[in-house]
Image 1 (cartoon, rainbow, N blue to C red):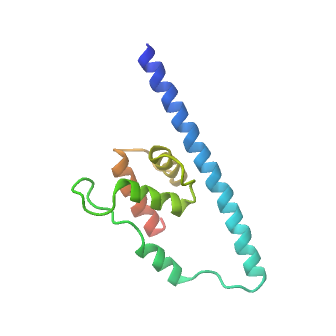
Image 2: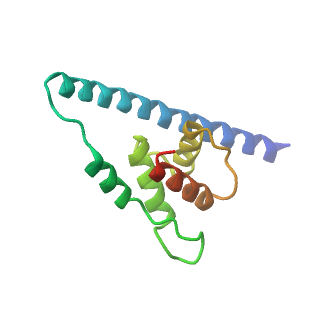
Image 3: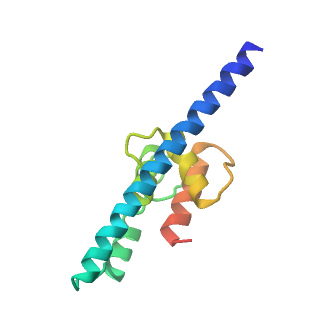
Length: 126
């Protein structure tokens, strides 16, 4: 009835927000690729292993999903947004949904579990 329609509308709105976050990320990625190409054509060097190891070092700790160890959900999602170029204003739910979609992952478990899985996957460059 009415409750089911409301849940369906909320799910559609969440999916639309996730799609908007993903589109914004694609635009930022294209801009970065153009900047890298311009630097390469001028003989600039690309970031190397030092940048990769520094990025990995700044990865939020995965924690074990509930005992308070490691980064908070908000910190993990902020790192995911930055890593994937998602809009900072995307909600936690939309950002995780967009990241799952981009990485080809099924949304299994709660947001914290999904964020932990994304952080682990992205930190390893899988």
